[in-house]
Length: 352
Ligand code: NAP
Ligand code: ZN
Image (cartoon, rainbow, N blue to C red; front, side, top):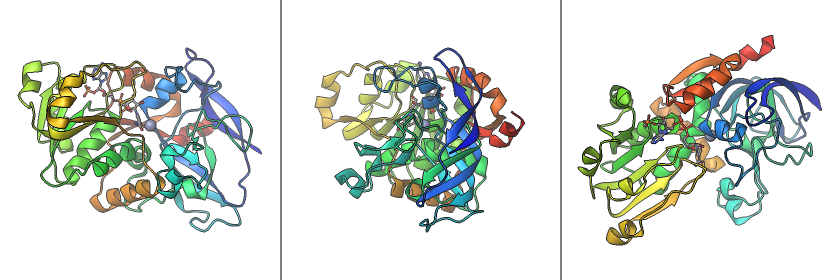
């Protein structure tokens, strides 16, 4: 075991502060990374403040962070994919049982015995896992991704959650050239969905509550932008979408979007508000529409997404901050005031 620097929340209302945590020394299949950048996902905020207490109560101290890019500092004797000095990346999962049907299908995110990167029982230490708001992390090589060499690292970190969470459902629901795709909420996830939809050749329509994001949406690859508080403007698109991805972190009216789907169209929820969202069933019955959810993506697909980003030169639009600005960043996230992902420069942790 060794000591690592980190930022942790000590209670739902404490905010985050500098601390020291214990990590395991790399075992034979492990990779140790010096963390260079870590994105700030809205899930970090939900979890740090125990907003998902019903589903996944937070264990304190909580070190969030699951959009990790780093430099390999050490590898175990059996590690094949990485050597010291390589770049490596870690997303939302650090382990799974690798024997269940989900793991065998490459869908580790649905493994009943998976381990999330933070706030999850840690089989090695007996405590909980600690995430990427830290100077280093130790992860089994199966859950460490290769980073394309041409991408900016600060903008690559958010691909590990915001990227795969939007790429995976688009691939699953067959978004392709000519599809009409809606993206609801232009935040960290939403802006990646716009980039992927555009790269896949779809006609992308952004639904935003923020009129000030209109120009950005077009620059990011949207073909049209709709201010979602204007119901008339929204309803003009009734019955026309193949696929809509909803990435909103708060309770809102999803029936508005169900009604925009074509026959057999799908609305996938990736946003994770803590409260239930009422669904009007008639909207689904007519036109055989479906409403579903999606959780991050498997390891093979995460690598596919990173390679796709390398080929298409796709990264997140980031505002790079020092870790000392984390609490301010959370407040801005709540106001939808980030363009479009915060990425923490972990060199800032050295001075703590
Ligand atoms: P984010 O950057 O805060 O973006 C959320 C966006 O939702 C905002 O930028 C805003 O966009 C819109 N929004 C916020 N409040 C709203 C409201 N009251 N009504 C309508 N729209 C509102 O968050 P994120 O990091 O992208 O995460 C989004 C959600 O996805 C979170 O709940 C997070 O926990 C969840 N998540 C799920 C997965 C998964 O695997 N399913 C993975 C990662 C994150 P506009 O300004 O454009 O309206
Ligand atoms: Zn996330």
